Length: 344
Figure 1 (cartoon, rainbow, N blue to C red):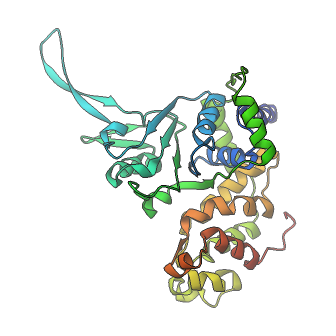
Figure 2: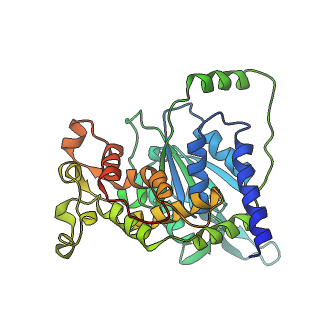
Figure 3: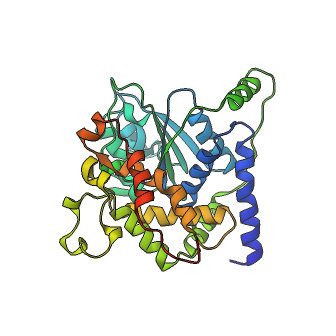
């Protein structure tokens, strides 16, 4: 790719956040994390109480990216065929022959908004597994490729537990980022009220095409990551695992492979190898968004909470003490040794 093309793509990328800001007040870190997950080629899970514009944020992102967008409201009676599609019986009007035709479901899109994903039973949640991991689905012995690029952006409500089905760890691990959406500040809330109670309606412009996004995803993988930072990312992921889950060969290698005290006391299961991959890919995406072609320690530390929080399973003692994965991650960021690298 020529330098001029790269410059044009990065200029368009910087415009996306400004465009989304026309309808979303504040939440800049959340928007950045959404864009990072898209550039990293991964899926994203957003969690927050009702009314924090999670759905609006995703739909606004889809409009600025000029991609096909479909929304599925997950409910207890939703079936797998409602997502992936089903076969319908048709008749050839010329020959009278009857045959089955596959009717594609809403998963055949670029961006799929899985709204309140934890409200549907596990068998329906599992219908997304192959689509999320393989970017294709299988039905009646036939494999169908999904459009490129393909993203699942899911939301869930942490408040109500009745009638919900928590996502299994295997499916949570497919999300490159788990983003927590918090309340706006006082000034942001005043601005939200001002914008939404008047007559002004902002129309969003499409900025990046599907080809642009694929080119940016390829560019992300070309961003440089020094060996010291690769070691740091691996050490951060490995430090989430308690002593009992560390390999015997690793226990005496170096301090980075040893979990800190809070991990041994409060973590049942730590992050798997996908965590290290996601840390580096997301750090590369952030570096590119900031106009850099090499990642720094700050990039890894910025993406670490969203990458790791859904991959750390705390034990009963931690829950009793109200210790969350975010608390564990904060301890880890302070515990794991920072490399002495020029790219800091």
